[in-house]
Length: 262
Ligand code: ACM
Image (tube, rainbow, N blue to C red):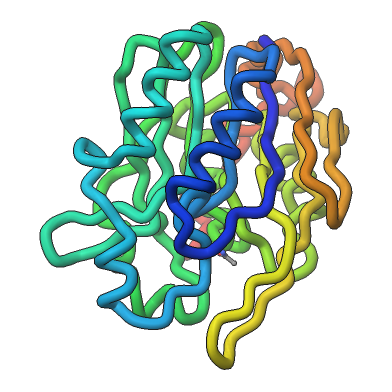
């Protein structure tokens, strides 16, 4: 299955411009599944709840989602993207998986980073697996990486491919994702953004280095630190379903849950 990432630089607040750029990349992508960054159409540094409310949309009223659905249908492709999701007077930092049949599955970020806690509500819906061809897609967003429970929960729920839209600012995630893949024997696509965003007193330099990683920890494809880049690889996603490490060891069956204080 050909899967990939679109590492690009959204401009804050330019929803239509960011959408058009993402579409231009998607139209050229020869792949069955592509991942876009976290908050791909709004940008990252909100300055008030009001601003987050104004820039967010309910999933079923979002122009970005409608346009991405058209691309998925026309190109027979699935897309995973990070969006600001409005639900009445609340805003969630969400990821959606859109399939070629137009179905949309939403994940609301569970672990909010820094001032995201001021603008977004923490996720409040159960994690879901999206079945798509041979893939069983699990979504997580950016800072979720630092909680190993997240990737583990997705793997235990049946994910063989973790799609991970990101706006990374701390070091280490890209390397930590090797461990997340090894310890769960799953594939992962971390799609990070690049560039600097400055708003008021806040400034973030996003770290690029988007990666596609295999269940044995191999980096199959990697973007650079500063350039917009598309990465696509062909993976046998079913390989992630073999949790055997030796003839005596199975990654999931060997867990000693009665001894873990979680
Ligand atoms: C982050 O979770 N966007 C750092």
